Amino acid sequence: MEIRMTQIARIRDNTSERRLQAERLIGASALQEAQALRFSVFSEEFNARLNGAEQGLDIDDYDVHCSHIGVRDLNTGRLVATTRLLDHNAASTLGRFYSEEEFSLHGLVHLQGPILELGRTCVDPAYRNGGTIAVLWSELAEVLNEGGYSYLMGCASIPMHDGGIQAHAIMQRLRERYLCNEHLRAEPKNPLPTLDIPSNVICDAPGCQDLWRTLLGRRFPGRRRLHPAQARRSVPALRPPLQGGRVMSRARGYARVVRVLLVVALGLTIAGAFAVLERTRIGGSMERRQRWSRWFMARLTNALPFRVTVTGQLPTQPMLWVSNHVSWTDIALLGMLAPLSFLSKAEVRTWPVAGWLALKAGTLFIRRGSGDSRLIQKQMCNHLQQGNALLIFPEGTTTDGRSLRTFHGRLLSSAIEAGVPIQPVAIGYSRDGKPDPIAPFIGDDDLLSHLRRLFANEQSDVHIHLLTPIPTADQERAALAFKAQQAVQVALFGEPVTGESVIGKQVSGEPAQPSEVASRSARAA
Image 1 (cartoon, rainbow, N blue to C red):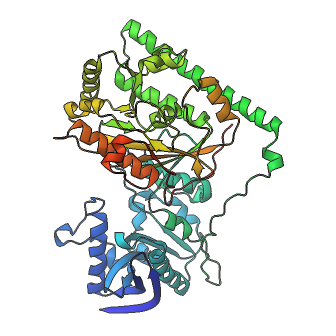
Image 2 (cartoon, rainbow, N blue to C red; image 1 turned 45 degrees about the horizontal axis):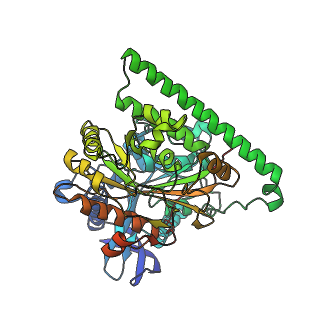
Image 3 (cartoon, one colour; image 1 turned 60 degrees about the vertical axis):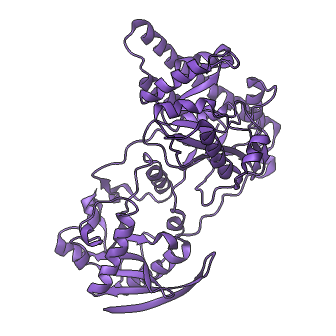
């Protein structure tokens, strides 16, 4: 086995100092190491079906035509990152680039200069940080400079088990910042599904931050120097005179109110259509209600003054969603994520406009202290067994976002009876890095006053965490409530609490900021 060693870097992590070395992997033994690492990532982690699986390797016809580079941990001797490179000459021999299996690359004919394709890149999960990818990219830079390549291209696999949120996040970023001229664009043979996500929702793409920081320039000039993309810079805020004026604040508030009213009018039209369908008995199934309700919630979210970040994976099966409760806006923000029905207090049914909209959207209503808890549990169980997701707020009331109330387990019995998991959800509102004092809808608040406060201020941030589902088989409802509350507590405040403190008192704390969350300012009226 011949290995060319070119770059050594010392990388500190939380436990030790790692010595990472970039290498050219040459020979059958080195290639097999790379194939074994690829198999462990693509097959064992992402469940891809690969040739060579019986040997624990990722093997295809391209490997022998490619050159391979990697990163090795000198402390352990393990190969921890690898990628392969296919140049235009080898692609001509093969009759295609690897990317042409998934994309129509008609734009290649417009490129003048040698092309290098990057592919099958993977990093050991324990080494996924900026240091490892920087060492790998440094070796790639050497290859590019030595070969005088003018263009670098490649494709990447994106997991779809979250319903396409991560793929949407990456494509959203590419379209906004890196979209090339139309005549050069690749056309996918199997396009991504369209997601109905509002423009002010930023979907977190786990692990993509290092990719954005190390993106390579589209074109390498004649002196063969590598030009990495510039580090992202925050756009400076407008100066106070331009954003704090009373006239501008009023105009902004009025514009936002008008926008919300237009969305509500649209919702009333949709609800009216369902009312007609009910009378004529043509349709109006719960599935159709949830689908249109989600569409409406997405438009309402887009009209609200929030920047929204979503982390985690959407459930692939009906579940009982349980969330902490801060404001009426929780319903719009969570309702736009997936087809959902809600459980609400009976008083909401009497609210003008909003109550009728909730009824037509398929909301279940419960009257506290009326003794009909068994009846509502049966309705919830039937709802879940029919394949319809349902969301409840087990605290029973809203909070100021600085604490959690006890999660009541009584209504979780429906999930146990229906045999569906619990989907814990944490929602947090923040403004300038601190709990948002304006977003909570608590105490004697009325809807109109709350809307005025929201629209009179700048946008705030909302972080929605879709947490790991909790199985309900052979579980008691009190235990499920405790587990769900613990999960939400950790997501919002960073620390679990003891059983005594959960049951006996509220828990206060500052919301923990999600790490490596993609965010940007969103336009709102």
